[in-house]
Length: 288
Image (cartoon, rainbow, N blue to C red; front, side):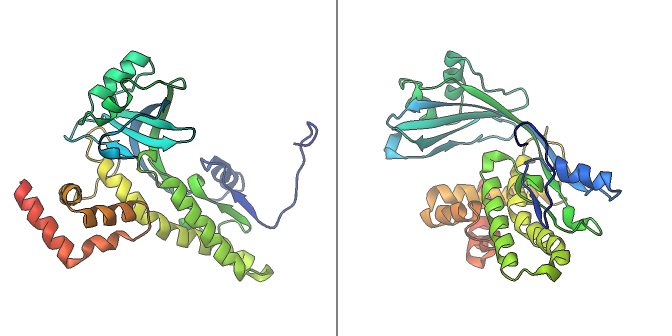
């Protein structure tokens, strides 16, 4: 829009980073192309967050994450350091567990978390902002790479391809990786390669998405109310992941590796190291 007037601009390459992918999907429909197949995981997760004056957290930790400790329980919380000596506090829940926006109920919800660290950090802290709610109904992966004869000069990116459950904090990282991928492809770009740019980018983007999608999809299936295709070996994967998490609590090297994997600094295949697999299996036996 320029001075209230709509303009149409010509371009050799258009990147759809609009966030939900509807623009690309609707365009495909409008030109008679098949829309992409989608993988959807309905999670119905809700958040409530606010900024608090920074207060002391036990053992001088800067970041606190409280996750449900029992299957079926959905209440969780997170504390992150923020600017101006404040903390960003987020409470989460699924289904009927809706974090409240009332101040007293917000504290009561924090008190119900599996550990008391978050509650103790904010119970006497000054709240600096209103409590803001947010909901995320489903994770959605649109498989644009499988669309035959994808339009030349059009590239969906980031959430337009895949919207991850934000609780795992991987969506922006994957979008950054996709931006780097596009930059690398454009280094060898010329007019003739425009026809192959979209298929090449979308195929490589699928590979970037696969690991973080699996890392977020598997723990989401802990909850029986989650709707989506459950892999046949789900129980084995959940038990393996639970054992790795228990090891990470006691072993700083495992903890560091797990953080690097979850932040996409290292591939998940590092957990297939024989020495780690052996320890995880021993932990699974001890926890059974």
